[in-house]
Image 1 (cartoon, rainbow over the protein chains, first blue to last red):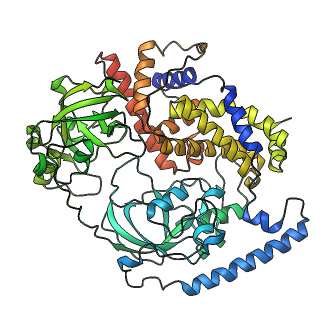
Image 2: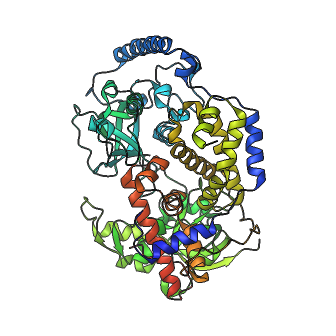
Length: 403
Length: 185
């Protein structure tokens, strides 16, 4: 670990001080009580091959049979798969159901996937977590869905896996419309080298077709290993490659225009402000008072790109508001700005229900200008920059609500 | 009995060995979950869930030597799930035993601690996780990437932005601003 300065030391010391020295007894007791009622989950391979005491020769024979069976199933899928580079799918084909029978699917498998979020959730359980096995869910059936293209960059793979396009890909996708520079959940994908495509740029909307369990996964191998670790078994390397989603086709996708939302003025609650697609037309710059919960997830933990001045307005690090009583991790937020000259701070109201007064279309929006665009993209027109600033809610008064 | 043997036995269904294994790791799991989630009840649930998942999925762990790395990944996933699932509620106040100060640590004064607390709470849970894994568990960035199932570049980016936010919190406090406004330009 690279401890560079006093800050690193302070942070490490603070974490050590904050960490409870021991878990309450109830935690282990309750966990072991749950464990006592559960049997262990054997993987499909282990179930097929029997328990660990099986003789090696028998295991090899069984494994051969399983591979032959998998090859047979794979061939059948291959026959079903359309040619790469075929014409772009119609919207009705999005989320094409896989040919995998649903009766034997593992828990947590949503087949067909409702959208990219399903695949992200599946992948987020970890590349080797049996609870998140996309191959078990979808086999190598072609899947088509809409997504945000996040682009590539340089992948850093200390284990030097081959083929690099499959095992060391830096490409990723996000949910449609998720253009956050940081913090968005990604689906890391590989791009079949025989496919030529050119997404229009980072955060462009695309319709992708692809599959898990690419045939090339069977050739995966690692030249080296992760620092401090022994080389992974060959079978594990192949297994992780099989779980990579391989894109075979990318076509630009025009998302539907934002649905028209009826203007509710005055707003009944903060949800009306969040949902309103044309905030300035609906509310002008009239003062609005609403009740909300203050949460701590402001732009503080994101980088603000593009850089637009004045930053207090464009890079809303004052914090965010959400409907009272909703989940911090599931709610939609209204990010807000506070003019530093006002002397108001939301920081003292962390996790508190508050009554907020503020307005859209602050006069300062007319001074907004882009200093630095998103890397790799051209600067936005001045009018568009000003328009985006006008849609920001500027807080002018905060009153805590009685608990 | 060493951990490797306990893992091997528990993997084959030995419940007694598993109980010993769970007892040996529960404090570390709970401390890590508590730091990431900043909530006793959620840390309770995430720790319990991790232990149950360990028992359930242990047969899939092929190499007992990789138990620690696998365990961390399950814990981070459990914390992530807990964060998603949990309904928002008021923070509970629990009296904790006073911890002995870390020897030689004279830099984390009360003001710093308050500022770090405020800044840390403002971080996204994924960012808190990388900070805890790197600075508390002292894992390398490669190990953090493995534990969070994220690419190394993403981990570096999260560390960078999280530490920048925390630095800003400390600096704002040092300026006597009384708030945790950070440099987010």
